[in-house]
Image 1 (cartoon, one colour):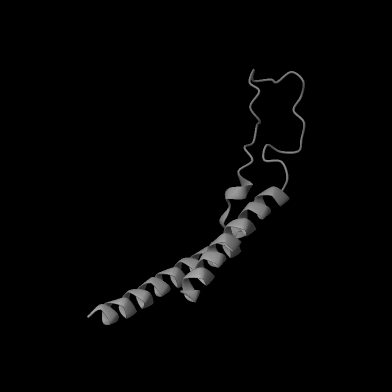
Image 2 (cartoon, helix red, strand yellow):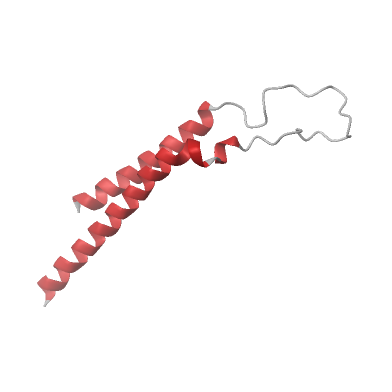
Amino acid sequence: MLIIWLGALLVVCGLIYMIYGALRRGRLSGTVRPAPAPKDGTLEPRRHGLGFLGLTGNLPGLALMGAGFLLMLLGAFLSAGTTANLTG
C-alpha cells in the first residue's frame, strides 16, 4: 500500500512541477504589445505562445509522473497477488 501512495505522490509532484514551469515562463500570448491598428485586421497574436507544451521543459515532470504510474501499477500487482493467496 505504501508503494501505491508513493506513486500517487510522484504523480502529483510531476503535475505540480509542470504547472509551475508553465506559470514561471510568463504570459502565454507573448510579452510584445501588438500595434494599436493590426495590419491583417485581426486581434490574434502573430505568434502563438505554446512554449509550455514543449517536451524539453516538461521532461522532468513527465518522468516523475511516469515513475509514479509504474509504482502504482507495481503496488496494484503486489497487492492483488497477496489477496489472491489469502483468499485461497
